[in-house]
Length: 142
Length: 360
Image (cartoon, rainbow over all chains, first blue to last red; front, side):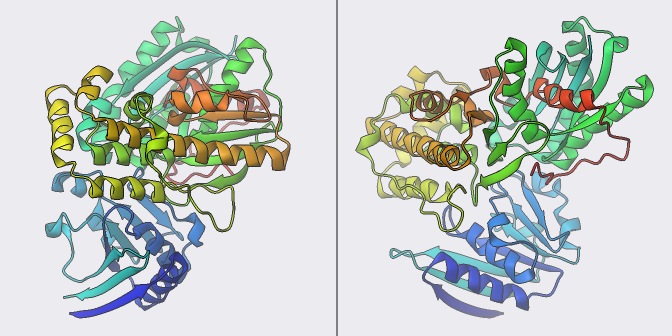
């Protein structure tokens, strides 16, 4: 497992970091975004979309309501499991099939369903600090 | 008299309606899945498709009966083609295609957001009171917060949209973190009247780039921080307990388990959401010289928003849908299809359900 830790001081820095990381990711790639409400998961997703050339940052919004947003004709899937409570509901999303595609798949609130996740995945933990800066820990599993 | 049968299944409502001349609602039937989804705090896609399948035939039958319409009375069939959950959209769209083939009726695919706008236009058509154009159209719901310029006719220009959470989503998430029911808008709107919005300072969004874009994530996070700074576990547990015993508590019942400080934060939250929405509408009205403002979507039910929009602060008149046409319904779909019917613009069976269908 490789673990790297970054600190970003603004939204722009978070977007730039996410874009750099996304350029390292070859598809199919499962990436968990882990952090509480307001941690900056959507902001990080904006950077990933830019880095992959899937969509401009301003096109990326919260997928909570729609559950799945697709960008760049299948380059990027942005999935939000916030509203789902059981494994059966998550399974009904067709997650397995999405994870098999030649795409980067960003998953929010997916750490609650560890049994449904592939062993090979990236976990991005975002932790806001008092001064609006963020700790971003990137773990590559296994 | 040209009747259009409209069908809407983009999210958690299965709806059918018969509308004459794009203005007279002969029937509007909505089967809501909120009771199915309430405990999840949202819609579950597989469950939603199954519920739509169960509901679509009886809902259409009821809409036809209420309208005293027979299949031979229909001039066209319209269905939502997107945006929405694909599995849900497909139920309504496939049903519409089936009817179109069997009854040889023209098929019209409608954008859900245009439908919301036409929920307001419909009333104007019925009363003969014209909405002056160019008009602004704000569509705010659980999944969308989009501001359009509508010069009239079939084209729209997107002026701004949310960069993170939709306005309705902010209500849902704040309600959930405070222990209230889903959807969050109605309960927070009603309780906001009992709080003092000046008692808690919550931030407005700071926007870089397009000043007509929206952002509600920072506000949601500010409420979360406020909750974390208090010792609220017991209070929230009491509300969740109330919900377990009674899925639809009255305002009085909510008030019994909601202390003053929480009412204040709800009032402050509501005031900022209304301010964020109307500030952009005001600015867009100035920039575009719009002569009217249409405010549609589920958030258009919000009493606080309606009061503020009618308070005289906007430079042009604001139009809202009647409350039962604010949330998802099929009358708005049939109404939006009307101008297309008049122009003879029809879709064929290759029409697809599109999760991300854009209006502009």
